[in-house]
Length: 304
Image 1 (cartoon, rainbow, N blue to C red):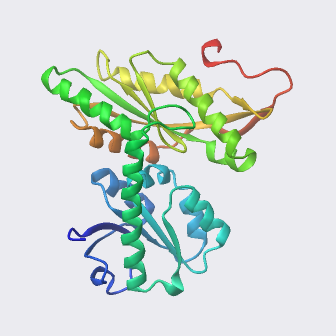
Image 2: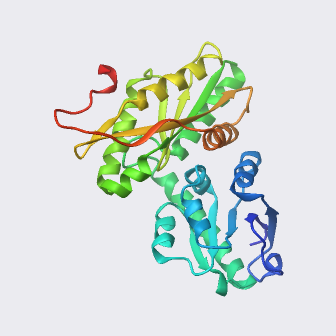
Image 3: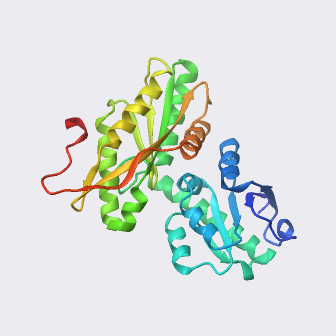
């Protein structure tokens, strides 16, 4: 508790929060969730405190494109007047650490919630290091991706060569889970992973970095200009519907790109840039049920 918590704040915090008896807190105001995304792109933060004026802001938080990226390393605590239990539970399922009723959110209560949320997030990171594979897809998770990138970047410092990281944000996976259930959503994520893998070389790395986000590391490219072409190719591959539970689900895809050395020389900076760009850019394609399947499955990516 010696180091102050670095906390991004949306809304007006109560006076005395920074001095509450749960350790020092450094507050950084942000102009809405877009401001949070920009701040996280510039530097990591221990926590995000969202002080909402009404429960509707919690629904907006659930559909924030950068949510899955934010909660990877940042403890998110939301506060709203009488938050609906169903909404609060849904947010917790998507990585939010705590949802508090504004009536009881005193400075001491908020400081306690932030400190405990950050400590839980640190325990989660330790657990992810022990289990570096995403169980739903069998792909490396973001911890293993960062470790692989760090090793590769160390080689690049001695033998410079271009490399790139692509982050794909896939809209439609969350709605598929709501419509079809967790098991079907896991099947869809596995099919997305297979399609990405089929569109890449054996030397490229595909990782799962969130419920609706994947990363592709292009370790060997002739020039940085090749990376946007690969990103466009992957988006086209994912534009073809995937079949689950007798339905063809269509997805919209937004991609973010970070190139070495132009956009950074360390793994965390590159991942942060690509993730933030994917969260900010508009997605291309459509989401939802593309069609009801009557005969046979959708062709595999390499058959399309």
